[in-house]
Length: 85
Image 1 (cartoon, helix red, strand yellow):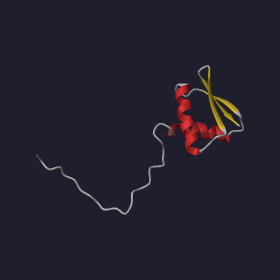
Image 2 (cartoon, one colour):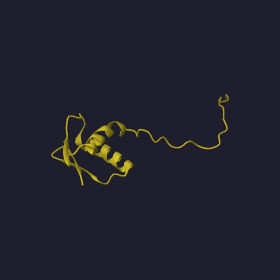
Image 3 (cartoon, rainbow, N blue to C red):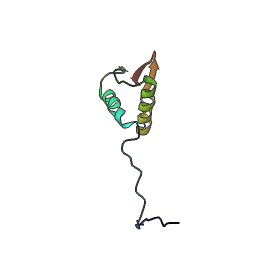
Image 4 (cartoon, rainbow, N blue to C red):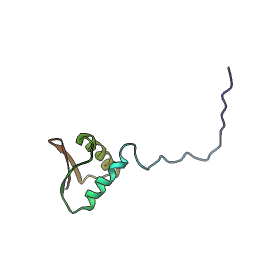
């Protein structure tokens, strides 16, 4: 059986988990940011090219990661609505 080549490097500690873009969520952050910066209390998200149920799940993940409880995400008649408390 041939030997498997490898190398090891000593380290003092493990790096922190990557806190950057979460898989699948990062590209939806601008939608949430734009809503939070707007003066509107209720908006309908349109023209994303994504299913409204899928988009709701992705934006909910972003809200959960940020600890946002003031944003309500609702799908009605296959349309996604964002609402501020």
